[in-house]
Length: 125
Image (cartoon, rainbow, N blue to C red):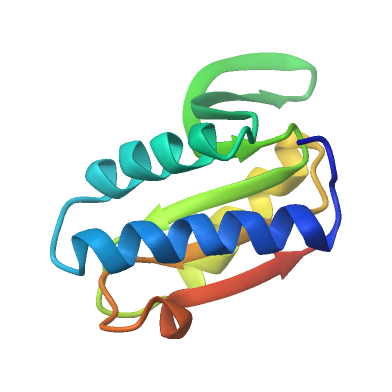
């Protein structure tokens, strides 16, 4: 699936909801990440996990310091959380990752919520 618009987003959010419905809240982020990769693969959606994010300063490569949880179809960043609530640090993190990766949009997905819809934050730059 190469659609980078709302069709892709709907499919990804449906996949995340399916994972949450099956596993429920209370597990580690890594469990949700792997389950979501299985779900996306089953839908034929290309995704990569734990993608290295290069960081440089004044032209100098600082080495690999960060990893994106999931990048879908080379155009959508998913940051997986299993926390009580989002805070400004989580928003800052995904905004910085989007800039460093050259992507325009992403989602914070908090699987700790009783209902996943209460743990979805869309982020665009």
